[in-house]
Length: 333
Ligand SMILES: [Zn+2]
Image: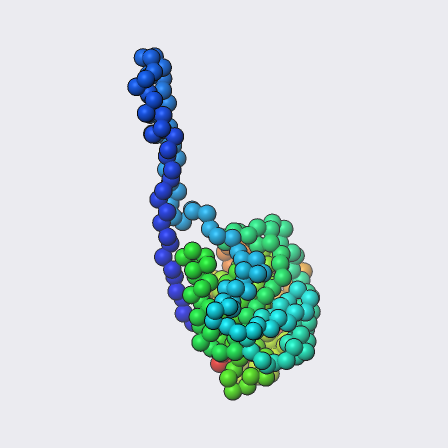
């Protein structure tokens, strides 16, 4: 979901609280000579060698919100009326919309969780709650807004919550950042569950259950889009896409895997690459995920983790696209 990127400035907090040396100086004059010398040395040492205040980028970051806090950020009570909560398993949707009905949403969430649970991904082993580290496994809660403008306003509140350290990106149809994921209903079809709901919830699930950052990397976008396609297969014009690949109209895989955040128009190519990996290299997926999470170079992923050459990966991917066809970009990505 990457069509615009906003970066909030980091807030500088220079106060480092050096009260101890200053307090000590007030009594130094009343001490005998030798003691005065020793205390003076101590004051000098503390003042001179005390650790300087950390740069803004290393200041402690706010932790991720818990469920109750998340709800208040999604739907501040002074701006919204009653909010519905619909849950299935570990997936929850909060919505200010009257439609789609609870049963339809619940069935959708159950189907989505089934697809996610079937992914061959080892769970994250190091739970944590600080931005920049691996997250604790947790339930996924999404906001589904009745109106697009309400969806757009959430962006700012998430930035404020992270104290200016929010480096996520907002797309036209939906977005996710750490535990936050949101989308909105199509005003012309309020009964229809938007495909972006599954896509964004998949991002957060992959982040919270497998430690994969939802920062626009090819694996996260490829998996989220592939999951979305399982629930909305009609979005994929596989035959037309296969034709484009045959005509050479695609991004070289090396560049696709080396670009983050991925442009929205390349999500579907990433999805077909992930589909191929799920079909042909399923056992290697946990290692691929580890490699992407560790920020390893795509060459290492292909040659060391998959044990292949770029040529072989492209050949297998092209064969997958030709056999299954592949989807075309959605207009709301
Ligand atoms: Zn995405």
